[in-house]
Image (cartoon, rainbow, N blue to C red):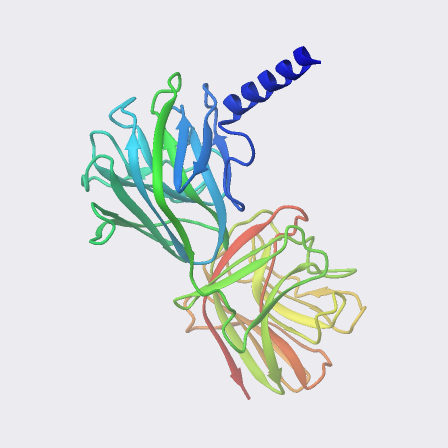
Length: 396
C-alpha cells in the first residue's frame, strides 16, 4: 500500500510539472494554445496576478504566424492592456504583448502591440486573412518591463505603450478585418522555433465597451443559425457576423438587426464589405412582417458574386421569388427599399446619389412591420462578416 501511495504522489508531481501547476492554470474565461506549427510546445499559467507564458515559434508576421496565444473573446469594441514584466532574449525580434485576432488560424487577420528585447515596442498587423503582415517603422518605448495597450473600435485598432501605465504614447493605428466577436489576449513568440522563450505579464485587463443595442434597434437570429449571429454599432458603422443556410424556401436562417416601421417608409444602407463565403452570401435591407422564419418579407441585397437582387416571399409560408437580374455590383454598394401601401420598390446605387430601380412588386403586410439589416452566409455552419454604414430609416 505504501509503494502504491508513493507512486501516486510521484504521478501527481509529474503531472503538476508538466501542466505548470495542479488545478486550473488560467482564470475562468481564458484559454491558451499554440497557433501555427510551434516545434517546442508552449505553456501558460496565471498565479497571483502574474501570467507566465512560454513559447517557441518562428515569428508573428509574414503570411502565417507561430506563437503562443492566451486569450478570451471580446464582443464589439473594447481594449486589452498588460505590462510585459520580463521577456527572454531568445532573439532581438522575440515579441511579447497584447493582440486582437479574428480567429485562431495561423494566417488570420490581427493587430498586436509587442515589446521586443532590442527593437522597442511595435505595432504589427495583418489587415485580412492570408495577407502579409505589416509593422510600424518607428521604434517606440523600450524593453521589458514595459506596458502595452490595444483599443478596438470596429475595425480600427490603436496601439499605445507606456513606461509606467499612466502616461501613454500612441505607437500607431491600423484597420483590420475583425468579426463582431474577436479573440483578445497575450501573445509570445521566441522568434526561434527550436527554442522555448518565456515572458511574464501582470496588470492584465480586458475592458468591454458598452455593448447594448442602441434604441430603437434590436437584433435576432431568424431560423436555425449556427454559429449564432452577432451585431455591433460603432461610429455609425454596423458590423454583422452570421451563418445561415439562406433567406429562401422553405424557411429563412439569417441575422437580423431591426426596428418597427408603422405604415409607409424607406430604409437605405451602404454595404461597405461582405465576406463572400458563397456567391449567394447576402447582406442588405429588409422589410419583414414577423420574426417567423417563413414570414412574408422583401429585401434588396448585395450578394457575394451575383450583384444586387430584390428577393421576396409574398405571403407567409409561400414560395420565394427573385428579381431575376444581376443589378449593381459587389460591395461596396448602396441598397434601398421603399414602402408605399402594399407596393415595395428596391433600388441600388454606386454612390448613394444616383439610384437605379431593381424591382417593384406588391406584398401584403400588416401596418406595423420590421425593417432593418439582414445577413446570411448561405453556408450553414460557416459564418460571414459584413460592414454596413449610412443606415437610415425614414417614416412616410
